[in-house]
Image (cartoon, rainbow, N blue to C red; front, side):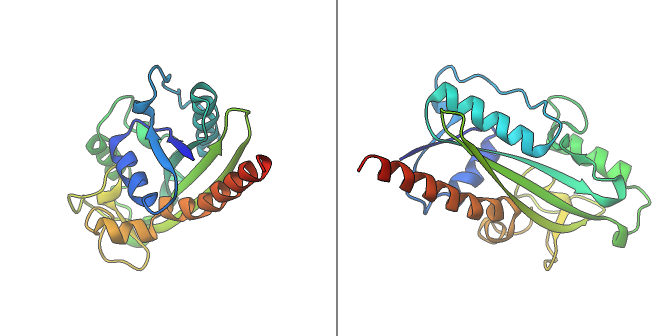
Length: 204
């Protein structure tokens, strides 16, 4: 069965492909679908953005679609940047600019009060409008400076609970076992399997 992963973010696509490598689906990305419109992520919540991307992409491409939206929630900032994580420092900004703004907002906040979490919502939808969502959370702390050259986004600033290295310092294998996206995808796998079985059963 074909599965469209509705993202144009190369870093996110690389991570999702790695996480989906052992699953029995033929993966296509947004770049593989000619004319697929860019979905405007203007919904008020992470969940709503994931649903919007999945439903609109599935209808256009006429295939089963998986989309995720992820936000970093910092307790000392009342949940910022949250749904605005990708655009925290403005539209079309770099990861570095977002990280720089986050560090500036946390200036003077002691380490023990820099708790945070990554929240990932994955939506699975088909062309009929059917959609289901799952969520994965990874708790951790925001460090005082960027650490490591791997990962993407806020990874250089986020040390997950139980680790001493940031996501950007951890190997991809380790990150892909403990991350918010990995946890959400494990739940999404059950949704995909159930969907696939329902379609196979309907044709028998």
